[in-house]
Length: 113
Image (tube, one colour):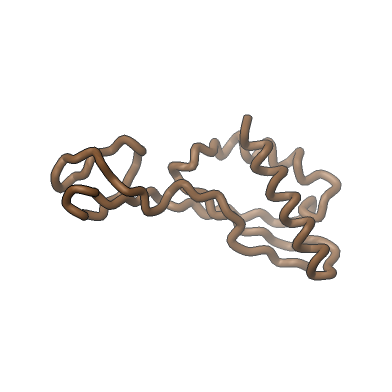
């Protein structure tokens, strides 16, 4: 379950940010997770509950914003929504594409108190 390692990494980053800001804890954390990142939401929720125990995130509100997949065809340069990583270009049916968004896993914001 790589969701646990993701959650633990977020906790580590949040603790460092709280230390650097001279704060006590995190009030809210906003995460941006791409639909193509391979993160199972239920598994992340389960792992999150365990990972944040006795940390600066234990009482924090966690907001997850999903980021839809988007690609650009390398043949015709058409930009299109990408539901699955292996989708073909709807304009020219080419399979070669540049992924523009959808695989990110990042902390968008942290509110520290």
